[in-house]
Image (tube, rainbow, N blue to C red; front, side):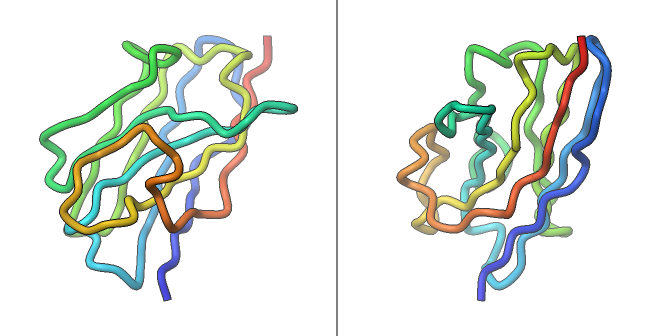
Length: 126
């Protein structure tokens, strides 16, 4: 059974930083691209960042470009999202997900991810 468990969310002030983590079990982690998505209040789930299997290629949404860094540690089955200069509009539940097919490249399309974590809340106060 594939499981993803996020952690690291919390309440921060504008301009603060958070590092989100997602631990994956039940799948050969290093075979799959990973992604981070978020869903704000009353909004659809949107792409934040993605990383390929070996961490050599990453993609960021325009909304977080320059403020976030996605990375992974295949030895720890963990993907990270470092977020800096946080803004109130970053407030959302953040989800990690695994790409649905092994060896495929990272993607911003949420329909191409098959397993999702339960999410971790990030709240940014003005």
